[in-house]
Image 1 (cartoon, rainbow, N blue to C red):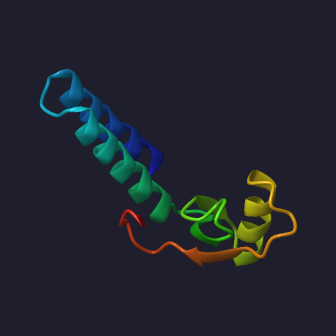
Image 2: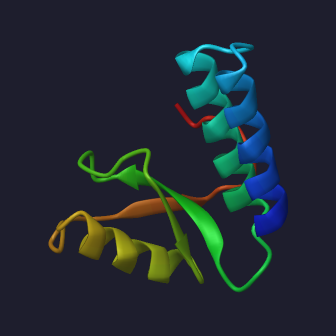
Image 3: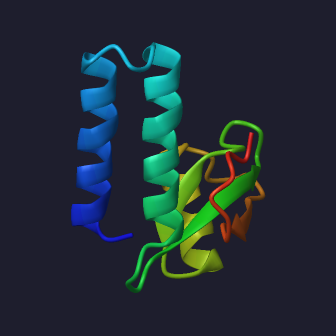
Length: 97
């Protein structure tokens, strides 16, 4: 999914919310789905990586050029410089929750 498609899909889910066709929980679920699809289908030099450890960052998804770059981004973003960081490439659009 490219950026324009993602923005169009977000516009559609916002319009459905404004029209009363979905509630806030549905809107959040749909927005999350659009963003996850965009991130996991991102075409470019970056890929999505889900953090498995440390606990302070577990479940977060970062965009990086590779696993080592992802670990470095996690250390910077979550201020866990001394921690062992485990990441895995995101290949599906599932929630990961």
